[in-house]
Image (cartoon, rainbow, N blue to C red; front, side, top):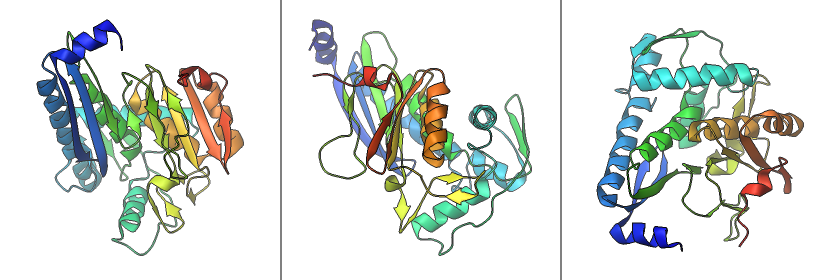
Length: 288
């Protein structure tokens, strides 16, 4: 441990754990006013979940899906990014599938006995903080990463370090982090040491029978195609989250091609037990 890290931790070292976005969030803050910063990060995450959870009838996303219009800065930011990824992935990442996401999640939760069989089309527009849409939107592929980013922002401060982890999505970590294996056990897929955001996706995380939460609207197909996908992204956790989901939905050759061509991104795709890495992924692997 460096002298600087030791000094920061002596000033305060706080860890918090709470439920958010149907998963466990963990916050670690060290340094000046670490306890207050960790509390602010948790409050930020919970408040954003209340605005972005489509299953909460009082949320801004639910109001948008019910009424076709909402004014909310966070929803507007997610929609802008979602439309960007829709174009850059040729429609594989598609925020227009709110009905599909709602019905699929209801099935996975056990609230429904049928999975969606058709996919939707629609239009959405953003003007400042005002969003209009003529179809229900699915912002879940962005929301958790966005919440991790904003909660991590709450940790920022002079003489303080920290990071946020939310169900496989991590803000840039402050030390090596292990990536969970989809096969269980204590041995991680890899241990990463990076100042980029990290996200992992795969059907094993949310599954009921042979059905999971990943879908490809272009192929009109439900189900992850790979055992797991781990992405490190220089832009932010929202990008890591979106691209991990996208790669999990694509056939192997297309996923590998997209990952290699995407600037500021490296990926590990585990397919039928075989590891496929982008050219520079190993530069982010921790070498003890």
